[in-house]
Image (tube, rainbow, N blue to C red; front, side):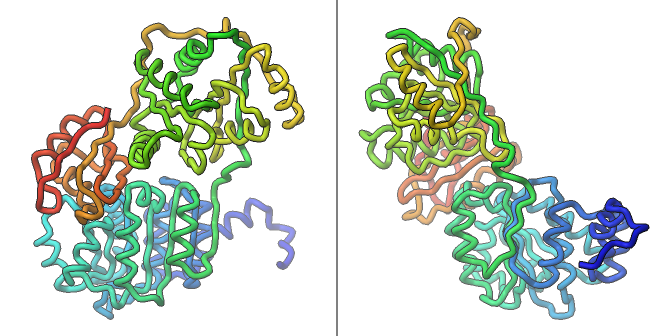
Amino acid sequence: MHPLPCTLTKTDFYMITTAFSSLPLTPELLANIASLNYLKMTPIQAQSLPPIIKGEDLLAQAKTGSGKTAAFAIGLLHKLKVETCLTQALVLCPTRELADQVSKEIRRLARVIPNTKILTLCGGKPIVPQRASLEHSPDIVVGTPGRILKHLEKGSLKLGGLNMLVLDEADRMLDMGFHDDIMRIINFIPAQRQTLLFSATYPEKIKEISDTIQKNPVDIRVETSHDNKQIKQIFYEIQKGERTKTVINLLQHYRPESSVVFCNRKYQCKELAEALWQQGFHALALHGDLEQKDRDQVLVQFSNKSSSVLIATDVAARGLDIKDLQAVINFELAHDPEIHIHRIGRTGRAGNDGLALSLFMPSEASRVNAIEEYQNSPVRIDKTSTLKPRENFRLSPPMVTLCIHGGRKNKVRAGDILGALTANPVISGKQIGKIDIFDNLAFVAVERPIAKQALKILSEDKIKARKFRVRKLR
């Protein structure tokens, strides 16, 4: 790298390298970008646009509002050749609302490119008018996986000339159960293409799908995941028979939206769950005695925010990956300090503050000492008298899970459920959470205020042209 001229400050250099004019874009596109008041590239744009323009695959971690839509929109418009009369770019989004937003942004950026046709294809809208719009291939298609796949299978959408595939908010699409639909869509598009994958988080399943559908992607992480990790760890000394009461007091004092309580024995999980239910907490137990279908249901409810407290043994919690876990409570200390560190490491992820609360009796002081020695630092010990529990406090989870008695074997897809719900104008995609599809069952999380409406819609209307029994999980 050449040295900077002495008259050029670091700030000046930053402004030059993050200016859109530093990119090899057409004068018309640059002028339009300037007219939209885009003064300089955001971090995700500055890091992703050069490899996008070069034609490289991209795996990028970036949240909503980071400027990622403009990044891939500018990249695909730069490569667009409207004279080909072929669909050249496909953008997949988890919800109809996001697809509409993405389409609007692309249209704003494309207004200086004559005859550019951008089409939005989502569930919850009549399919016949969409088919009519596809009679003349659009240049760019934006849509949800379920509806895109339906058009592909019926032959109304042809992607033989596609050269760019974008997965926007890929983690949310996977959370909503769109993995299988995405993989089926891949079978309809050319192997020689550029694939851009944007995700707000970076769970293992994002890496897995990237390995499957991308070729040597440039990996970009705009936001740190563990550098700012902070876990507030507090120990509370209790007497015999005070564990359950103290856990209730902890939940009433700290009021975490989601927490995992670790027990050393299965019977403790069951008894504590029952005690918390009686106190108005939505608590579920996860232990080795559960059948797989019951385990699946418990994990679905907790991961989609339909339950506030998960009570588990270490064995049952293996492989558990829960986003935004606000607190970990140790009902009883683990026998091994390494297991303790692994337990509390489930909170405070992705730069968020975490809370780890542990109970111990005087006879268990040696376990506390072992933890201090293992982490090479003393622990904070507070008295339970410092807790200020709120009487009659009820921690209601924000979501409710609806169980549909139809799954993969009935060819039920996440897009079918999403479409059935959003076809009713009173429910929007933003009010629908995670969708999980199993062989014979499907689960959909909806916001608590619309749970009754959603249950009525799914019970009375048809999914995949047939009716399924639908019930609300407690």
